[in-house]
Image (cartoon, rainbow, N blue to C red; front, side):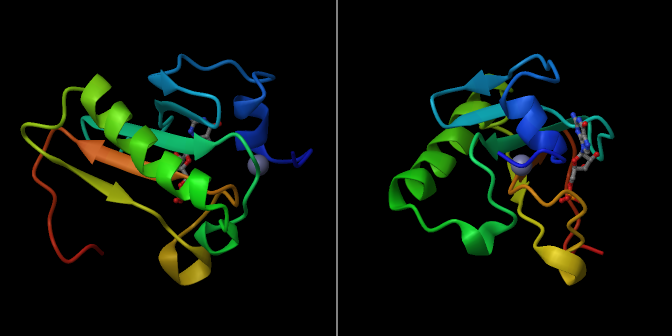
Length: 113
Ligand code: 5GP
Ligand code: ZN
């Protein structure tokens, strides 16, 4: 847990959110500044600054399970969706607690900006 981390506060329920999905190690909730009709974030409850610090294989598998379960809960699996992990400055990361974006409800352009 990092005292100044907004996502640690969400993970520990000090800041309440409506969970879209939750298990022992992950919680998913709506992004407060959605970039698509559906924009959710899946975060580990443990603080990792970026994807590069995630070294626990059970959590790596769990992250994919949590993304799958969240996409299912949001009914995105038939039309499809995009999962994004931004890493540090060039990746456009603004919150330094690992998170998986799930974007859906519209066609996603490629390449990303
Ligand atoms: P990043 O740019 O780091 O990949 O994404 C951070 C995301 O977290 C942004 O899409 C931003 O809107 C979202 N965000 C930041 N603070 C909060 C918050 O307190 N609550 C929620 N629900 N989303 C947040
Ligand atoms: Zn954190």
